[in-house]
Image (cartoon, rainbow, N blue to C red; front, side, top):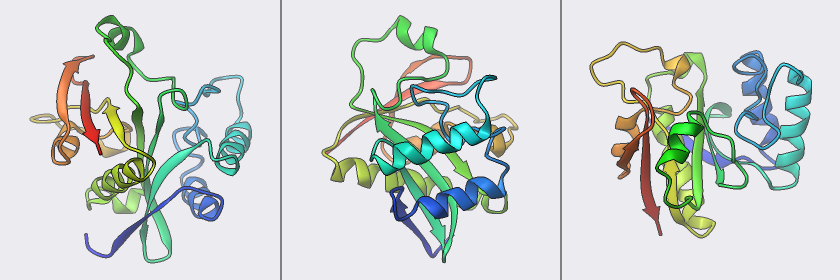
Length: 189
């Protein structure tokens, strides 16, 4: 898809991010992309609490994402952050079992507007996140995507993206942490 542009999530772009989340009922049951932050989400948290916590993090510069736009509309994002900003990951037991060293950065979550799936938004978001990571000093970047080769999957459940998208951006598989999930890494200068 041509014409996409990417901007960082910040005080100025918050309302664009919020409109996308609100168009999709808070995303994944009201997560507001808080699941990987220390506060997490859960049965004791309301979508309104998640929204408030995410808004506070953005206002304080403690939440990072690359927002993808088609014209004036925000149509997707890729969340990234330092390891201490995003300490909660899925498959943590398997991840910790063979851990040698923590990365400088994690890419933990993608979301694409349902009308824009399978149109290159996730790839644009990943590219934007890598540019922001470079601008912020670079370092080792890690993510936990799913290998979907030869399988039928729903794009709405690929919150960590696909191995193929990461490999197309220079990431390498480091180790398996689930039947179809991998730790992938790349050094960004």
